Image (cartoon, rainbow, N blue to C red; front, side, top):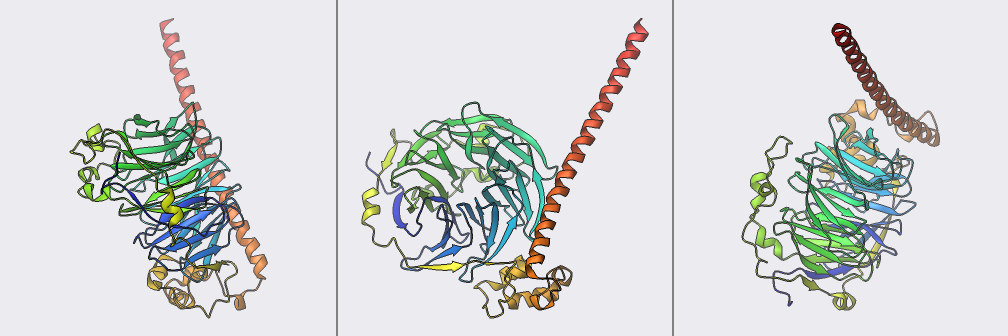
Length: 478
């Protein structure tokens, strides 16, 4: 079927990575795109034509996930090198490294308010971090195999995770307990996320499927079998009306969730598509794949649903809300209702012919927070005030900002003296910091074991009480 003005179009593509693209994310203002790759680098692309790109060097293995913070003044990345890094996305290359996982880290995700970060790892755990203090908070253990992804709900009350143990779990961030569990006997989910209203969860299946569950009534709402290989990634349009999927079959598929059908197949990549993401406003989306290319697409159908019928349901984020299918996917006049077929868009020749794909790349070497004590000559990044307000850890701040923070929070700064004031060598301080992190992990583990022991004791007590009641009843009858 011929394409029309409302169909997605390929705008441009970016080439600079040397290996497969694993993750893409737009900045909140929509002016930049961050990408992660098997080549161990992060790259930051400016969406204005003919502007240079920045390549961040620091991870020692495949970078598996990247995400902007809600304020746009931080980038979080996960890697197979077992670390999570926080970067200030400017020319300075400052980063802070988190070490608590004991195996490759598969995903990072900020809470909507930017206060917390959740990470998922092949060590079978999910960890939550406090961004204000840059400290590990707690772990979630219930998965029995590698955890591939963990994401916060829009209101931050829940976390959804998926694992190669073939389960999708919902966690309550207050009680730190698993409150819901969806299992699949065929395949496992490569990626999972909440819809924008927080009422549903979508999963990208290794069994080639896309599934959407209503978490309020624990039912499978929609089940799509539109790909011929495993689905690697999903992204909801901000309206919640569309979902785009990336698959190893080399295609992107756009699903209309109101009508419950496939409306677009996009074929710009020349190999497996590993990641896809809508911009925060939904007017653009980007995809990356094994062909090392990042494709930037213009949505076009975004304007047709700018007045979103779902907005009236955004307040319905609680389990006690009355669940109705029409609350989530209200039926309304639809611009594609006259189309009976899926539109296929194949701009591979356009990709080959575009000449604006390779901007000059500047390498930025990472300055770890643990070694960045002599950075007095560095200038403030563009949005220094925002960064000052966001960080307490002075090792990630520009020096002028650190001075201001020193006056503001002396109790926090006393933990991190300058190199000239240190009474122990930096390497020893690093080792002590790492030991403290591991002790935090052990403390959390012991706490979890104590909770489980208490629960077991309570259950045993209940059983004994019930047994005594039964004995009394039997004795009374006899």
